[in-house]
Length: 84
Image (cartoon, rainbow, N blue to C red; front, side):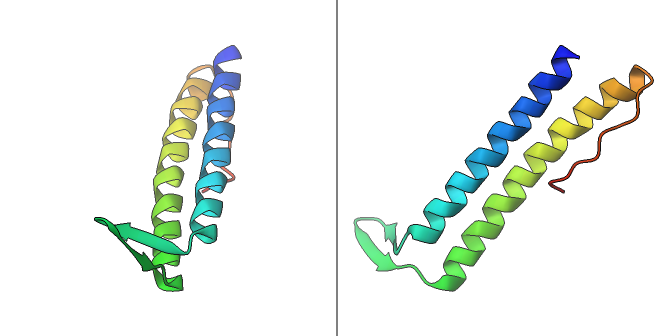
């Protein structure tokens, strides 16, 4: 039971970090390449946001997979990943 809470807490922290990172991308106006800054287009922002979402989705999916493996071994029903 305690392990499940730790897993779900890790998921919550990842979701919060994802939201924070996405909000930072949305607020940014420029990108730095070397020593120069260039305007950041909406296409670039959307691409960065998609990459962030994929990365966090993969990490959260891995946590749910390990959590559900333990639950199924104990004879409980697996939890559904609401972030997938």
